[in-house]
Image 1 (cartoon, rainbow over the protein chains, first blue to last red):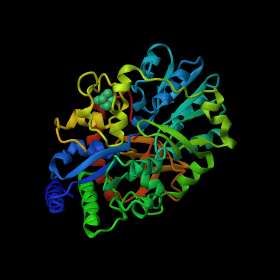
Image 2: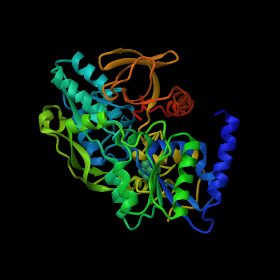
Image 3: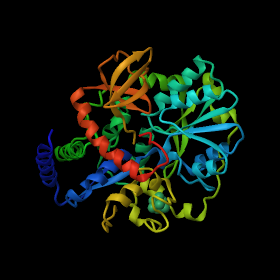
Image 4: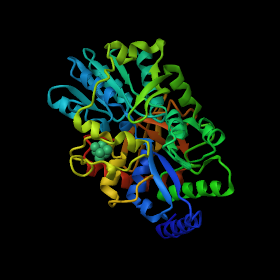
Length: 368
Length: 83
Ligand code: SF4
């Protein structure tokens, strides 16, 4: 589609969206951080009619990683002869006592990798050190991490392990749907998580809760189409799970990826920033692969401690649930900026606070 | 939350492959996409192909990614993002 076609299409979609429910507010949550980013960058929030509200959800993996988990891996980073390997966006996330960047400045060995397989190569190249990969991410990321563990076992790379902090999206959506303070009429569901899990795990959204969900692609046009499809469902009085992102998702998902995850990981309760302790919302390492579980290998315990002053003011927890927007946090743009972030929602390029900082004008109309 | 980049498979070696666009070449795993071969386009996330896609859609997606990439560079995140 060329840019003139795109503009005509955007105009049509916005006209279409504007025709729905002029007298009624519709709250639509974009679950995925990449969607939040694209919505911010393209100014979609401002283009939509006032009654159609886009609320950002819990889909930035760095943002939902709990303070206690952050402190636990930061503690591990300070251990002699351990090389921490991580995706870049975790580097600046502040714990109660510094970040990985600071730990590295103080002598910790921390390497940024593009893939968990790169972490595995670092382990092979450093047989006298222990290499720990920080496993953060949703269903899109965990299959590759599972394959890395399988490969480590096959090739007897015993100085490799994963610090498992992976999260599963569906229990978080369930937690939001049963929270009486959160009112969502429909979900823009994440594209690439759905590449792996397909449609079926989302069925409860429509069947049990009577809400709409559309698995949506990442172009602004895709997102507008996703919104249109949700409004169309509400208008017809139906609730279904539909796929807008047909090029990236098939209804049954990617079974090879799910098999890899099931082989290595098992569902486990997990701590989420903002959402708390949710059953079966994380992935623990199965017994057969326990020697690749950094938590077990190094006896790391998650310590539940009080947060520091600024960390306790940080509203990331409520922002992840769509209860607040960044401008309702007193630290936003003052004590908390992308160059000096207080919370993970400002660190990650997918975080709602970063998206608002860069793209959104100051807004009075907040989610109620 | 979990961005995947379209790349074209250039050569295959067991469950690993070389994939690329323009002058970029990366080694990726194709363990999660059985049946993928040379010339196919795949969505790649954190070094793993997760889905095969049509070339036309791959090229459209790349335009969007270039824009997001530019943003990430501005942010100086200390390294690549995994999404
Ligand atoms: S602006 Fe900063 S302190 Fe406030 S919620 Fe966002 S990340 Fe937390």
